[in-house]
Image (cartoon, rainbow, N blue to C red; front, side, top):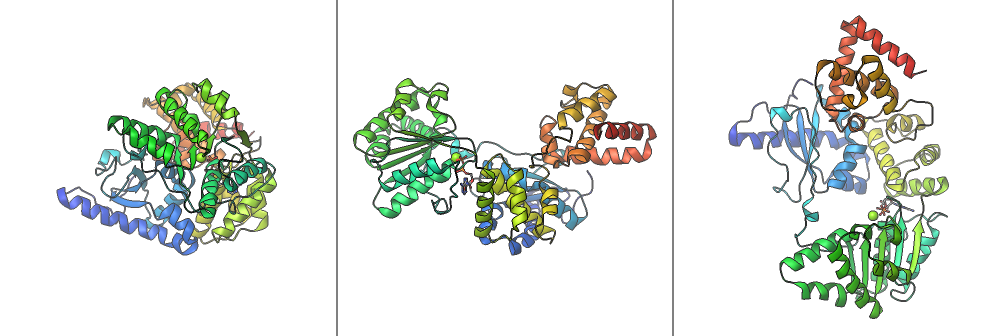
Length: 478
Ligand code: ADP
Ligand code: MG
């Protein structure tokens, strides 16, 4: 990777550095997302793009900050390559993106100016401050977007929705406790909020407490440290009519938190207050989950939520598109709905990715565009070799072990085989650079870009390497 962007600051000059680098970053980023803003709905834009803050631009590395690690991962997986393409097209030079997690301006976890050595790396910093133990938690408020109205009902979730509706209409009376379980991204959190929103609408004086089990744990730790257990108990046992505890599987093996939750549970249940928890596992599948808690959940109703069928997936896509003002033709909705089967979050992600891509390239949303943009997430049916096969075959031919290809060693023979395998993966699977990096033992996307360029160059200069690569390509393509 070479060439810094024209607007980039080339040399850190003490105090000057921050200002100039920030200005450059803001300029580049603003221009990059301007077109998106014009094309995407306000809601989509505000959810996905506005919270991203440009921090600095130095030698082709743009540092962006976001308050949520989750959203950073999402942007990296779904939008980074699309954005990079656009950034690079505008400036005629390669650039890399680094993300930092930042709670509020000026408090980033990883915020110093990037050094030239960092130039080729994209770093995703972990540790979102709100989940550190011992930090007081303000229970998050309910997301008003997550309602029963915005939830698409189908055979996979109608039982869960019926149970949730009953609980929302008669908290503490219908099913208590309600235990909702199901895989990631299937709508558990959405339904939890829907119950809270519905109950509050019916009775604005109702005390609804929503939080993740992690937040509950942190709150407890904080209360213990600060000797504020009476306040903690009052908060969860007395001033609470509906306790919504998300992702209770996190309590497994946390003895003291389970103990406290057990007493909270009993106090609420005795007082006829509603308890609604979600989990990605059944009570008896949660490792280290106490028997007495398990049996408590048998008192109420255990409802499951399954992955949606294709009709429901298409209906969800259409609803999201309508809410977000995305023009989604029927054939594209059907195409996405039949190919993206993992979960609803992926489904939403691909719709936003498609809309962003269409708007950046000023094209309309068609099945062909969808195929092109969604290569990374589409379930490839059968015929293409996967990354593991490519690594194995390239390793065989170039006499390097697969684990070395995925490893860190930089010895020339190994490095070359790694570059060849990355190049082949890109050609054959069309996966995004970050996705390929991930498959090669967690390498940065810029490493993959470099590998591709290097092999392209070597294929022009070195007939032997060219023959090797071409033979591999033929074998892999059958
Ligand atoms: P979980 O908590 O089970 O991991 P979420 O509730 O966070 O999943 O759902 C992921 C995303 O998918 C959310 O944006 C949610 O609104 C959406 N979603 C899931 N199921 C549906 C559905 N049936 N109708 C509409 N949106 C859905
Ligand atoms: Mg959830």
